[in-house]
Length: 226
Image (cartoon, rainbow, N blue to C red; front, top):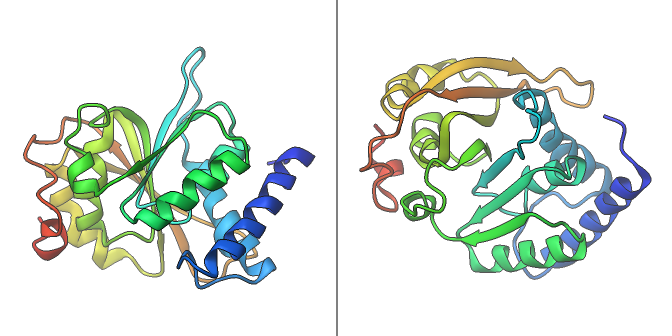
């Protein structure tokens, strides 16, 4: 990707605001300039390699589940101004930061939704309405599938960012993914010199509707994974 001067400036503003807000709101344990550029911003942009092919006259809709400080959603929106983005975050103070930073960066077509995925996924405004669902460091795959696949439209895809050896995690999640309407398409290795910790993108296609009872009520997916 070749970023414009305007996009680079937005990342500079994003960094400054992230560090300033982090003094009073627990957004990240990583605050060093270079660390944030690589560990947060560049890592978020690796999701671009898993995006579906653009379709003429169709706006790509993306939701970032458990976005925290806006990662990976906001970096994606900075470099892809044509997308529609919904940032889902349960913590009030983090949602306040998201409203602040999206206004500061003048990002349109971005909606901040405060709530638990287990509840918001049952809202008709968001259930199975997105071409792509993204999530970063949210939960093990068998739990993540229940929290994210209900947002994904049939024909859409989930992109989960993972690190390290995930073979056991993928094996343990195969039943849940299939039952919730997903099918693992591929696992892409992130091969950039800046990363030496085996980062991967797990791409799951949504092939059928998620049963209406899922996700279960808050806390249950983590306590009793499918």
